[in-house]
Length: 137
Image (spheres, rainbow, N blue to C red):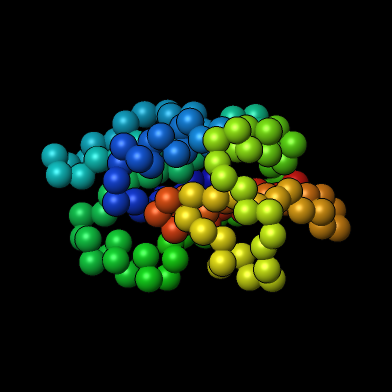
């Protein structure tokens, strides 16, 4: 199982985004300290064997630094693009034209699916600037 971590500034908004607008399942709430909480999500059979901890960093300077870098970048390989696309297109605005730079994808939007040698890919940027790439290869 692959485990990653994403930092966000608003836990409630992140929970709504990842567990409703994206096809992740909330595994558990994580409360390591009274002033810091988060949750763990897992991919279903569409996404693959991934587990991600989503939390608010104790050091908000770290969050500001990550935001300047446009957040985390996570690549979900061997994802099933068709059902993911069906799910996200009901919940997220689509950016129909994307340039060569995926860095231009606005927060809270998705783009794709795009055809590539070996399969398709779909891009998502969460409301906090984190970039998620789902690919079939």
